[in-house]
Length: 263
Image (cartoon, rainbow, N blue to C red; front, side):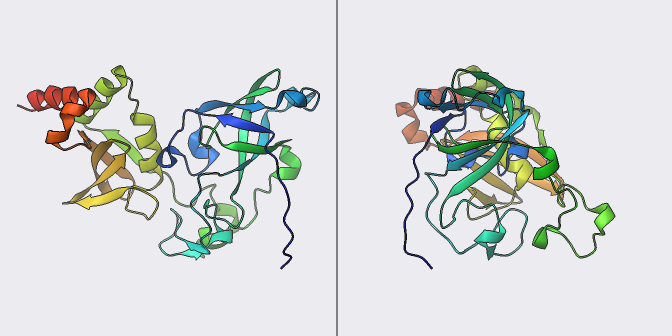
């Protein structure tokens, strides 16, 4: 292998509501509805001319918070570890992301996009127009993602569909209360649980009795998987111990509010 190195300079940055790695959807298709911006260098004003006629764009970015190269990983759709180059995992020799996003509009050198699966602050390396007749190959085989029992004519877009996430009354009330106090957990927990609600090396999910607990930043979400396609979110808890909550007023108020509601 060549020992040569190549210098890559970012041409812009992603502005996204996604801040932590656990919030990031596994693919842009799992990020439908998430809007953000790609702020390009102002010197690229002429470079973006004629891009506004395209409905989608490819965004190449550098996953600057990926935690190093791993030759084998266990992706959400697999029951065992796979070679990283046969997956979309971020632990690549060069952590380059490739995302197809909807181009909403262009303002100067800012691209407003939808379907953002990249974290806020991610460096952008390049933007290319998405051209359906040359970029899409619908009947292409998908390796280990495709069960041997599937015939070509029956091959679905995703061989294992998303889990349906439902909220118990208590969980719905807690999430609404948190959103009213500036903490919007529901979009992130849905993104995570719809993809894979079971413990994985890259997801902060642990078993608890007959169910599971998902850690989202300072909060914990208890849920059960009732069958192969349904997740019931039971409740949200503070991630702080009772003796620690005095230093975190929001958590103290939350615990008091919902401890009383449970009586």
